[in-house]
Amino acid sequence: MPKFVAPALQVIGLAVLLTVSGFSSTAQAANDPVVANVNGTQVMLSDVQKAHQQLPDPYRGYPINMIFGDLLNIVVDRRIAALAARDQGLQDDAEVKDTMARLEEQVLQRVLLERQINEQITETALREAYDKMIADAVTAEQINARHILVESEADAKQVIEELNGGADFAELAKTKSTGPSGPKGGDLGYFEKGQMVPEFSEAAFALKIGEFTKEPVKTQFGWHVIKLEDRRTAEPPSFEASQDQLKAQLSQQIGSVYIKGLRETATIERFKMDGTPEEVKPEEAKK
Image (cartoon, rainbow, N blue to C red; front, side):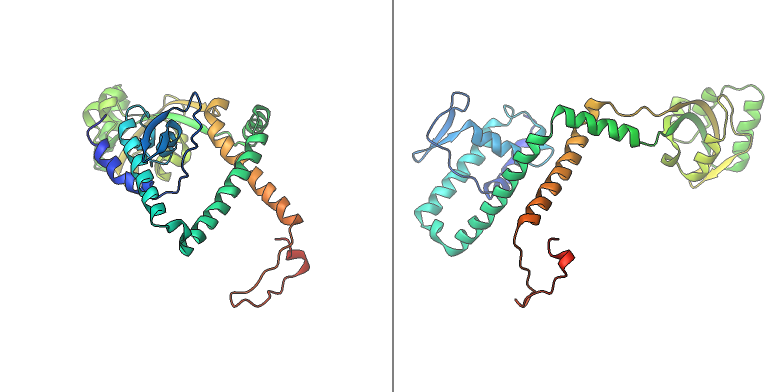
């Protein structure tokens, strides 16, 4: 384990400790072994897995086996604290009951929506959403360009003169350019029009392949001489690369539609902040 992870997990552990988690059942599944016994209660592997899921980035990205010991300590500490709270009768405290009731409502809502979403997000639904995304996408043009960045207009004109005399653009960029791409021959890779400052983009996209700007181009960074190497149409992302985005979009849509349907069949009375009835127009009654 990287040396910086363990101390960080000790700090994060307090936050995870403060999240609500029920005790594990005494029934042991074959794939969910007991990983600790704490004052007569069992800590299951699934408890540690849930603690792993609650970690913030980037710690959640570490394999669970790499930080298992620290995660187990977090879960054990949470169990010890919860048992101590029960021994003090805090489960009967009014504030605790109110908090638990609100948490129960949140958990019920989350599980209900998760089940609706999981039932409807099928391979077919994802494929249909992907096809629609591709059909609706505006295909962007990309260009591959090089540039030589210098401090003054006079320096840029000198570069153009050397290029007109047959100098190699990439080699000239390596010796003349003050920009970070200079060592790479001024290569900027492929980019879309909106990815560069307007003055640069306008000049670069106006070129034909193999051409370089005959006049210096001024931007906030200095003076540029630009050469166009290639043009292409941006390839749409693959279905595999788009799945997380598609699942998030479909989840939002499915959840919204489902809640809207529940609203349409629910009896809802709204009140103002002072508790008096709120006047609701008929067409807004179900909103």
